[in-house]
Length: 458
Image 1 (cartoon, rainbow, N blue to C red):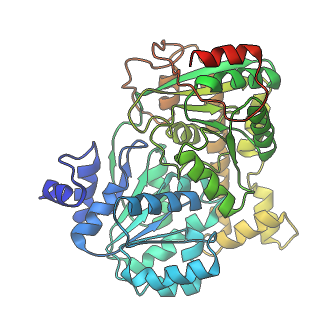
Image 2 (image 1 turned 90 degrees about the vertical axis):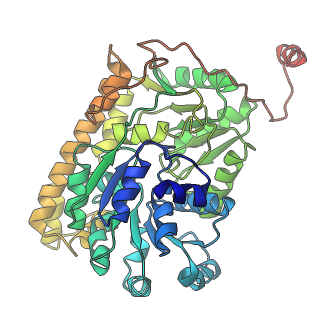
């Protein structure tokens, strides 16, 4: 029966690994945590039950870019009863979206948006058949000290006690299930396929200085195919993009300070291959469904294995061989540590907040949100645990770049998961297939004699 529905609604004869078990669990009414690798068709796990039940689905999503990309993909595939509502929309766009709510099969919102009282009232009138927590690792990774409304999502779920919840992610730490159940007050059945991506080779390049990294990068992108370059800050993003442009390549930048329209434009240009290289902070990634990304370069290392797997998971979604390359210099250790734990909320912050003392405004806002549901004692325990996890995570990444053994084994050990890759594993085990896909230079400038000669043989 389920395969008949798959054929009817999507034209596929068979499910991908893990999809059928997750969908069966949902159809039986179980709260379900599905852990499937990037590019393995997680969205089908909620789309098919929606068509079968003929009831709308609410998808709570962490990023605007992710929502927009999923809405665009669904519309391109012929599903037009889909709506997203978020802060990046104009008032007219939002009014139009509100008017479409009652006729929508799929409704995408952020936690911050739907937890506003007047929005809760509006959505409580809709007879949902399924609630999806998309990219649910963010609830665990960001939920308390970055996006605190994630930690209140249980308040929303209390309004829909008889509706199954589907939590989806590509990466799962050993404590993810525990975190979700703590926040939602529900038990979840877990279905997980391998987190390994055999078609993405892993390597690390070591350098002594920033300029050495930059020189290597400018040479490599000539033949790296569609490429994402992850950096640590807006400042570095702009600097590297300028050098890439000066080298003759069109490139886009993506960071949190861009307007919604600027971010959307860059993303669409990249998806359409109008630009082949993106320089981005971690704000870019989860909403990008570009199948032919060949290379992901981390100019600065991610602060955790979860972030790293999510970011390199943009590569090779078409199943073709791709590569993830991390660039590392000794000084990066201090940068990674700072990014990982410098903004952690400490015991003294919570104590000062409780006493009504003046503290950092952002921390004050976070604690104000969280105390709607959690006691001060609970917050002390939560943030102590968060600090320990973040410390363990960034230290694991330092071990990843310094290991003398298989990098893939080192990376997946953090999740206690096995390696299934046999060929083109990592630079230590050996990579036979290196990416060599030319990125043509499109910036008009005076060419050197050598470049003119090379162009004759293209």
